[in-house]
Length: 361
Image (tube, rainbow, N blue to C red; front, side, top):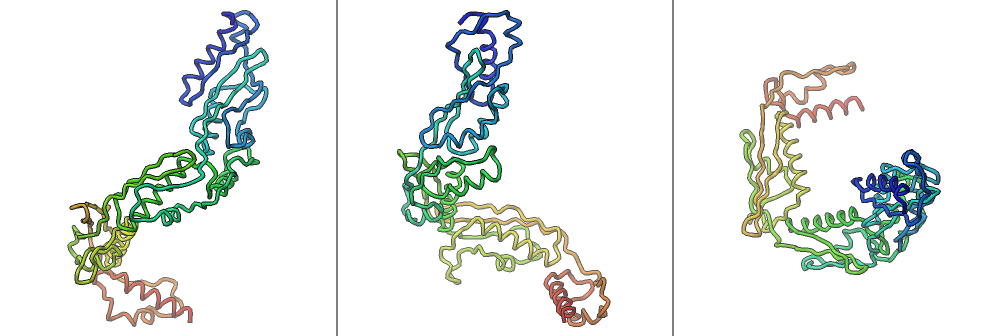
């Protein structure tokens, strides 16, 4: 290559190489026609053609609609980087590189793909307490082999239509599993173990040829030994624990090894909050539960409550009550609710139900 003819491609290569996306450039093997430096600097490089390399399983017709620059278009770092980002969204590839080849008639853009493995089988290692069949069931994967990952998709951009199509083919084997999809499987496995009492299970994965292997460290099954309620000054522990579905160990109640489910425990926090609001604690705050594992098998849970002020009833007023008198609507509850008493959400709900029933009649 002569000196003058190589200046502009070198500038373009440096421009591309310093992009945050992995984009590489190949030096042109053909010599460009010599010209003045000013002519070369002002020259605009336009796209001559696009080449796709490295595909074994994915149909190239799935790729071309996402390459949004056509013949004659000006090639820039930004539009190439955006194309690569869109291609990664397909979830089929470990790596994508873009190369440029300079010719007298413009730039050739070459995309080189490294595909993720096509998964024909799923296996598990280390699962002694839960069977392979049960784990496959929670993954929601059809075990029948499928080869639809190379189907042509008639869409030009990554949008809802393409997302729906991809979702429809991502249900069985014989295809590529994206890292996001595998991570969702890992969370499903952890949740299954959590329901069985294994709270600190660890799950990783690796590929063994065309087999996706989940490696599981089950740890030790644990049970809830104690639930401590802290900060409650006006409501008793038992009243709070009664609204919770998460229970602590109790020999008298024949709960020997109650299991911990984190999602249920978080729902219990909302049940406790509802209880406090019904009691007139409208500003109650409840911290995220603290969970500690002791002796390798006992969970100790601490729930901290900031009760705030408790409000009293200062009056009851009905609006738009044109058919009944206020006295008629509240007469059943005179013995249950009195001005100056603490707010009682349960009685208020009963009054609302009475009003609804009367007007329905």
